Length: 231
Image (spheres, helix red, strand yellow):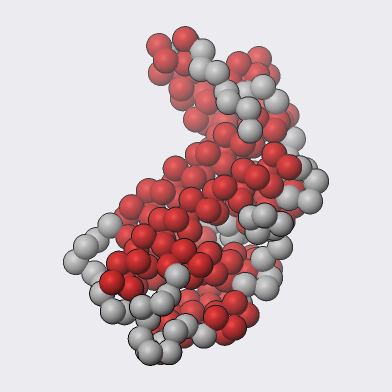
């Protein structure tokens, strides 16, 4: 990803901020619905009433635009992680599940179009190293946040002592992305609910003397097609 240099007018003028925000909001909705290859800049301009010159004032090109949409999406994801994982009155595993339940509600409001990262990753990871690395980095950020909460669960005795919280977080993200794809295909939340029930039932059934059944947990990750780190 190439950093986008800020212009002085962006700092000084709330109007230009509003213009950029309208473009990003429209781009996120259109990328979710149509994907990257079918996204036309002219369609974004028509949807927002923004002239072409203003678009290229904020973004170098279509790739830069999509990458900044991903950055905005990740800000929302981190806000969701803050809300879902930040309530210290709830047990750690309940907080993790709460985050995914909140995400499920967001998917419902969008018509079960699924995860922007997963959709773009499936579409672009095989043809664009820029997007492949960007999206994998985003998934790693999410897994890192989840792993910290899972480490709390391990210390609390809710997970077996030998559990690797980061590996479990990676598998959880993998499983969720597969379920999100199935949910998008069906326009139905059932795969998301089934995945959460399956995953947390498996985690809850684990005993400190057993270790997690990694074969069972990994089974639901098979539908995710974005290469793992080091792939």
